Image 1 (spheres, rainbow over the protein chains, first blue to last red):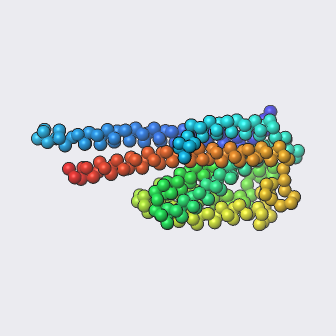
Image 2 (cartoon, rainbow over the protein chains, first blue to last red):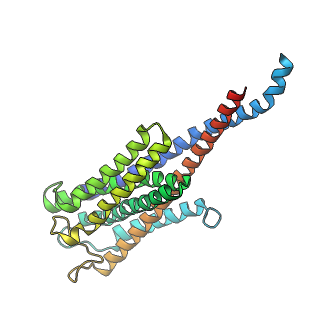
Amino acid sequence: MVNKYLFLAYAFVWLIFILYTWNISRRQASLKKELDELKHRVGESVSAPTQGKSGY
Amino acid sequence: MNKKFPISLHFVLTFIGLAVMLYMIFLYAPEEMTMGEVQRIFYVHVACAWPALMGFIIIFFSSIVYLWKRTQYADELAHTTAEVGFIFCTCVLVTGPLWAKPAWGVWWAWDARLTLTFLLWLLYIAYLMLRSYLVNPGRAANLCAVVGIIGFVDVLIDYMAIRWWRTQHPQPVVLGGPDSGLDPRMLATLLVSVCVFTILFFLLVRIRLRLAGIRRELSEIRHVLAFKHSED
């Protein structure tokens, strides 16, 4: 039978590291998505002026 | 750094290290005679305490470099280290009482070491709160650098507390006085644990720095877009 304090100490440490790593990967995924969208918009805005002028 | 020591290799090294560390803690290290199994908390407690202190040492030097040279990387490194250091410091403050309750009969004692470690945790929180709540990034970086430099005093006193004063917290077993010392197998396990958690600390800092890099790139693109809109 494992001592309950020992179990709690190790369980807490692993849990906090797993949660923190998951949190970083979630933030990274959301920022990457935003970055890709902005890069796409920058690409559009570079080609947009000629389209805009021809439209007017 | 990335080419010489890729992050994937860092991951592998950390996982192998963690497996070796767990083997040593639970199967290699002998059981302590008076405290029994609960003494094994000591390995993870000390292994977390070292990166928690080291985190603030890195913040201290990064803050000086930022205030002196105004390099953005130094500021990002300090911010990143504060976040990771806070996680390690939280582990210290949780594992400590879980060891103290069966060993001392109380969860907490307001002695010098414990109080200063709690203060270190509050300093980490103060640092991260300043980052979150100040709208102006330049002002946040300046103020955090000042907190990082002043907070380092706590690290020094915290490290020396058990050497200077008689505390409820045990005296140092490594680099302590003539009466200090550990069983060689316990010492080997402790040193491996400290090394593995230091490797883990730097892995988390590297992962978190990547996030800061993406955030920086994002803000640069936003600036470009805002400039283009203002021109239009």
